[in-house]
Image 1 (tube, one colour):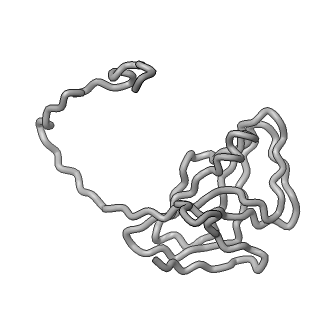
Image 2: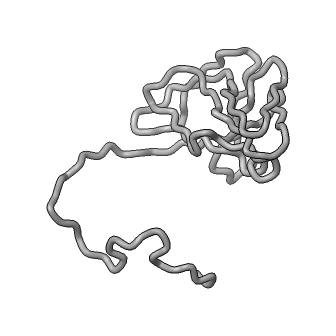
Length: 148
């Protein structure tokens, strides 16, 4: 699959896979100077990139697991979505959930991007739904057995 990408800043890095079988590409912070996120502070980290995503696809923005577990760096919105009709700059909506300040350096691999296909749906209002063994059980209804 080929997706058009525009460098809004000449120093922006193209997203890249870090291993042969990686599902997601790392994306870099496009900063002139480092910024420090204090604990619980949020920031929009620019990437210097914009995309033309084909209809029927999205790009999911996800946290990098190493930054999350080691430093508490997460995404404010959990997983972000870049819609096919958005043409503006991708900014990473970061939050420092750690207990120490976190420094975002220029060119740092700050998040990861995953291209995903989706289908549009329409709702069908009905009076009944099919039966299942689970039914309306949720929130722990299947138990907490460690063997599962």
